[in-house]
Length: 228
Ligand SMILES: [Zn+2]
Image (cartoon, rainbow, N blue to C red; front, side, top):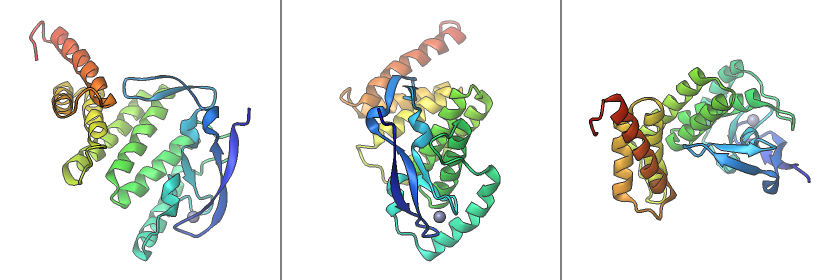
């Protein structure tokens, strides 16, 4: 079975035209998912190939954002930032990339989305960066990335117009990330808001109910039987 193909892109920052490695969707097999939906793949790890990077200026984003028109001011801002991000390292963009290449790509993209004021996408990049560290058993770095993801999700929920389609996902991660970062009471608050606002037709509301129970049980154990 063929795993990779190449797609042409034009960089919205430096206008370089290049080909990026993409993965055929039928080559991706999700074996199971962690409680925060982190996929565990069998075979190719699709997370390594999710982001697209311009090999010249290292602009890195989700595929669809390569069609975004940036203003001259935004381009200038990103070019300056990208010069600095080159210190993070230059990722291997071939088919043979590894977990550290993918971590560099998500790190650069997180910086870019933060600068563009796109909190939800910055949060997603930090979340996936956290997943890469978890898969690498680097739990200290995972925690740092998840904290940044949480900060961006919070900022997004408080300051942006959120569609009802997106809201369950954002509420779920506010609960789940607080739970993973040992803010269990906050996790319970966000999960309870999610299950109040959305019924079980939402996958996120169903998962939140499960996670809420897990956390309440663990709190009961640590508090010697007191219910939350
Ligand atoms: Zn570029």
